[in-house]
Length: 322
Image 1 (cartoon, helix red, strand yellow):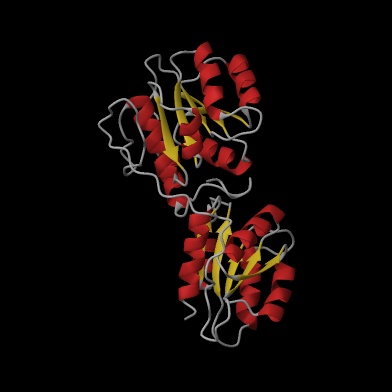
Image 2: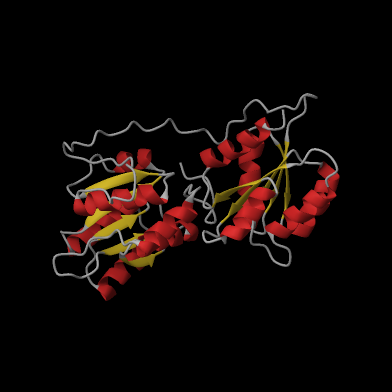
């Protein structure tokens, strides 16, 4: 179930070393005609689209992107045939399976990989997958995307990556994994409580209103007390007011970035340091910056982040407060 906004999405903790390894060694075999393997990436969430596009390009694929079905059809007509369509399912104007049907009408050899958190809705409308179609269930990692693409296109895994969970139709030797039960995001749960019997307070500091709003909603439904700030300066003021147990911190913000916020926070703290997780979309942070963040006691995770990953990060930090 897709529950986060366009600025959220795939869970990609540990992405930096993966992408650097990809950049150093192309994983994408060439076609028989020695041309690069071409992939059309279609997703209405910009961060997911950009993330998948970057991962595939660094792996040696030639890519084009589109934000919806009509744009994808127009792109295919302008740029010619693709080897693979990698598409979300639930999109405005045209669903992914309808897009796949139309593009395969133009090019029957096109392979299709559905990258979706809406597997239940995919199979309500589409009873079975056709030959050369597969799906990869969100959330997934860089490795998962590359393995799925490699398996579908070349029937083998890239040597640099461990096994992905990919669903294949028509008697594949790969056994399908059962889907996890959808999490009811509208049902309130028993709150996580401090030793004083109060809900733990989570401060979300991010200049993206979609991120702060969605994180706040998800965490509130989990029973946490949530405060938000859309700048580092506002976040530091909020710390003085609400004394949060956990801070979820963006890295790239105007004027004062996440690292400067964290340095200021630590300088002001007189007792036990607040638990902090940096959640950033900057996949290429310098090692020096990463080491400094870790030295200041912050975990580092990478956007896009989905509901289950958000809750796992938060729950792990809350446990450190007991």
